[in-house]
Length: 142
Image (cartoon, rainbow, N blue to C red; front, top):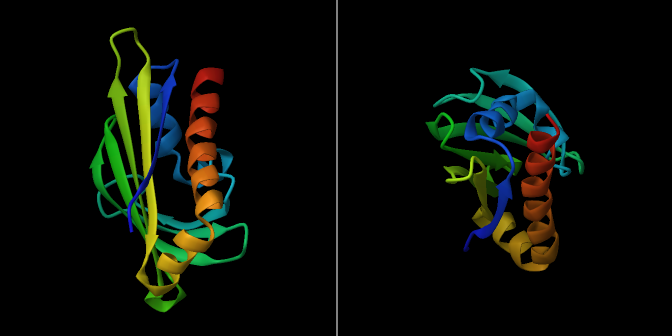
């Protein structure tokens, strides 16, 4: 299943945008699909983990990988005993004018995830857009 990709140019330096991403318990502030982040271990570092709890009540064990401070982080979630897998890739690109281009790639896979990406594609696109906008809003407000 292909990734859904969305971008935003943020009126903030990469360090500021990264500080919002690095606040793992604070992810529900910019991701409206998240209710809470539980059992955060290690933070936003390679191999760090947490449990994402969605507004729907679904829980998924999440691992951070591909972590490059102020540049990139990937996360991988597994829920429903492996029947649902999701992954996200967040990228920060410094722009010449002091702003940051934030890119977010998201997809679900495994048996249930593939079905959800087809049935709920519009909601997944909207959720990805809302995440990018939420990070932009927080970074520009601070």
